[in-house]
Image (cartoon, rainbow, N blue to C red; front, side, top):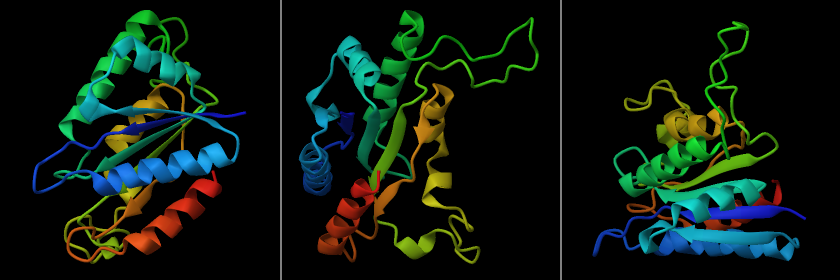
Length: 195
């Protein structure tokens, strides 16, 4: 039996970004995992959250997925606040992390090895206005050959710092100017089945 936490990090903007695609992707992931017999819990950041309850969900989960739109090249600010709230409080409670891993008595211990989330996995699923060809191509002006995973290292490193394995991300591209939602859904289901 696996425990799955899916965080819907969409931030509502009336007439611009209402969150339908992100909610659809959360529902698809939930259905796919439940069809395998997994237990799924969800958090919708726009609905608010209890910090201690979210820490316990992270302790409980085997796989954590953040579903988010990309706003100005990151997840919405409400997601960053959530991360700060959860992990700062988890550090003081020594639930997800003990410290940064270093030791004054053992200089071989590296920064980023004090986490307690070993055995857990983290994945980002993102919705972009950017087209897929913006990534992994040295000729592209903005990302200059970087991947989506490179672009989101600030999010994934937080979970890696706490001991989680980072899974390859999933992206729906060009969702504003040239969406292909039907194919994106098929690709997402295949991505989830491979986890």
